[in-house]
Image 1 (cartoon, one colour):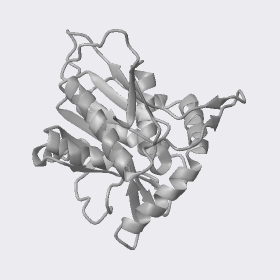
Image 2 (cartoon, helix red, strand yellow):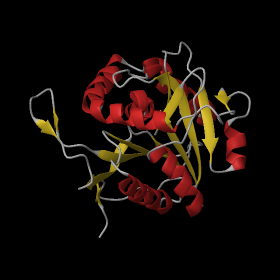
Image 3 (spheres, one colour):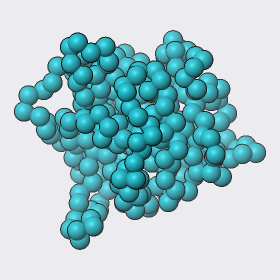
Image 4 (tube, one colour):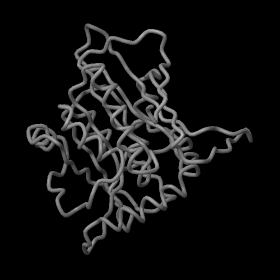
Length: 269
């Protein structure tokens, strides 16, 4: 029996054209989460699937209305129509990440099943590279499970740093495991990682915007980056409250695996 219960939120599954899959779950400064939530709001994406597991953290959140909210992980989609030159989107977001190694791997297997179901051949995972200080102009680094795709994302004009070796240790969590399992399943993938401040209560809005900037330069979705609104910031502040303890533990584990440098850095998906 699968650890994951997947609920289809649309009565009829959409037909997607050469979809691009983008992942952005909570991690250091919620950089990836900020990026994907903004895309979902800006493009008015629709919820396609929701995930539940008894391997979720054993807790619920208390909302501003004083009522409880259960943790959620969801996939949204955006179809631009047959006549559009834009690639359709599948977007993975949520309040949490799987809490242990086994559940992370089984979850990523389920995500890849969805990607392959819609004949998705390319994925982007996102996250933050934790620094000891707040970066004024965060850099975006890239790694990949395919040499050709890596070259495509690190060419001039996209603003992506390609020399990531020695900058981060192991990429822990969904952002890393999706690349590894994707290679086994024939799904090419890159991970876009933006510099941010490695503090559990810091909100990596600048890093999220830099990742969105790379995606916009490459795919031309028409996203107005100036519209990273106060509403989005407020949503993410609430998320930071939810994930404070998880993020603190994540930073600790990430630092244990990172290579020491003069400017200490660490990363967790």
